[in-house]
Image (cartoon, rainbow, N blue to C red; front, side, top):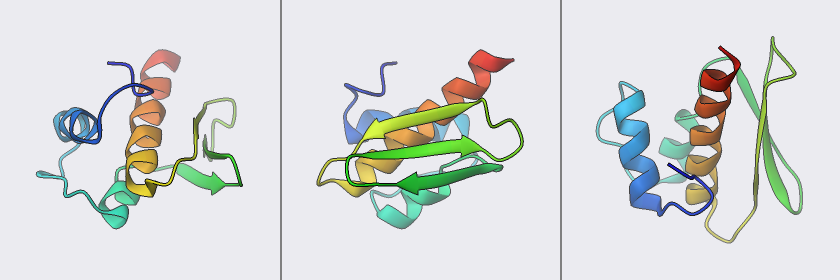
Length: 87
């Protein structure tokens, strides 16, 4: 799945299949909880960045939009995919 083009619902469905929290409501709080353990979220004016706190070479980033919940879901998907790619 391409998180850059996926809809909010597609992102939440993908995350529900990769994490134990079912179902995942469309809220900023739920989206923030989807970022895997060991990751820290940073935001600036144009993007959200997540870095693994131990393996700092593993990173994920998304462009910020007016829809913060979708941005955070997208970042969580990218973080999980980055961990899978690093294995």
